[in-house]
Every structure is written in structure tokens, then in C-alpha cells.
Image (cartoon, rainbow, N blue to C red; front, side, top):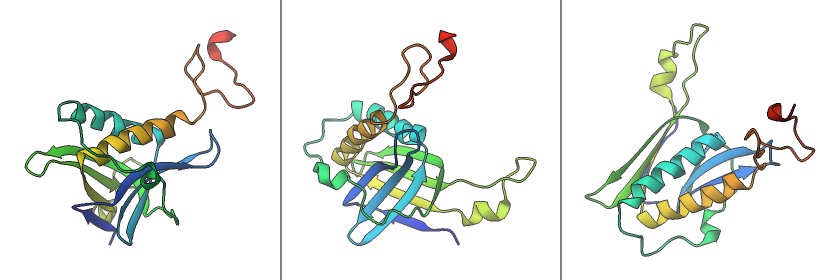
Length: 170
């Protein structure tokens, strides 16, 4: 049976990166009291969550409060429960909460067909955030993503600390 977490409220929901730019591992983490779950994700997945939540938040009143920056740091240990696959995002108007649903990636066979047993047993995390928590997640994610390698002005590919062979500058 895969891991299953459902948080109607969280103390923190955040993103973080471990490692040097170009070699970073991105993680999403939900915490409530002593319960904590961490999910490994791609930088693009974290950025897409923030982009979507920003769009949802643009139609809602500005939140009155946001978590302190210290609450946005990853709590140790950060051992991922699973690797992120499908993402579900939405807004619950009745409860004024933003929904973030994370599901484990499903392995496929040689033909690209999903493993039926893995579909039933995949990990699942469901988190409801206040508008303030969602806004703080967006801002924090943007700063974490921007802290990586800068993009090349010509091709847009990331520039390593020792430079990069730009395909547009040959």
C-alpha cells in the first residue's frame, strides 16, 4: 500500500531544493504538528504549481496573513515518500481553501503501459491551504527556482558556473 496523507489544515506547505545549482533535487513538503511528508519533484513541476496558484489567487481577495519565512524552510529529515507524478490543483469556495493534490508517478512497462498494481498502490498527498499559505508558497517557490543557474540570454538554456556551449553562438 502506498503512502496516503490528507491534511485539512497544515502548519506549513513548502518547496525546497537540496544541492548545488545544476544538481539540485526539488522537494515539496507538508507539515502538521509532528506529521510530515516530503515528495520529490522536478523544478518545472514546482514552478507550474506556483504559476497555477498565482492565477487562482488573482481572482480572490488578497490574503490578510502569510506564514513567516522560517515556516517555508524544509524540516529535517527530508527523505521523500515518493516521486511526484500527476498534480491536481483547485479552490474550495465553501471553505476558502486552495487544494493541492500530489500523486506518485506510476512506473510503466517496455510498451509504455502503466503497471496496474502500481496505480492502485501509488502514494497520494492531499493538502488544503489558506490563501495566505498559497501566496507564501508561490513567492517562496519563485525564489527557490530563481536561485538556480541563470538562463543564457541567447538560447535560454541554463548557464553552468564554468559557462556553457550556446548553440546560437556558434
